[in-house]
Image (cartoon, rainbow, N blue to C red):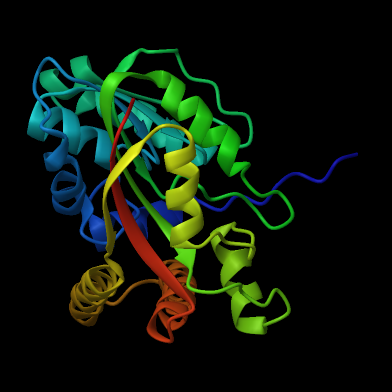
Length: 267
């Protein structure tokens, strides 16, 4: 019998992420950071947005509720997608009407063709060790989903130089994040976008901001835990999540990986 894939986002882990980054978010800065990334798209109530990396509903709620756009969210982790699908209809009339989240497989991307004004991808290139995301195919499907002249904002992790897959620090990070150590560089991803006809207007290293927001979130959580001591199970979930974030931040601190933002115009 095939071995079931490990559940990366347990209810306990989702609860910790909610405390760190705000309900439904899994990345530092929460909804404020999602809005900061989405504002350059000049969204309105007439805009439709393809959102990749919808987490547990926080990013979709931010874009629909904060900017009024129609959001078609896609989340690769089935546990997060299930929570998002439950939460969004209960997030108020505007969000319930304008935002949805469905599961998707980044290794077999299929989107409605020419259906969206703009797209926002939040670390959508995650795969799993031994099961990398086919980046050219994903970007091609995304380009085909945009209407002519649509804008695209993408945030993802890149390698500064080729990572050593035998480095224990690299391998432990890749395992805990569900990634392959064979990351592309910023230049390679920029070139891939250009080959598909995207006019890349901005590339920005946002690693320092990402790390600062992560530290701020953890400081808040530690302060709260000092007031209300957690039970054993919650404490174990906090420790596991802290270890996962330490692996990411350590590699960013030494410059082996970076978090980059792209803003591109479609053809």
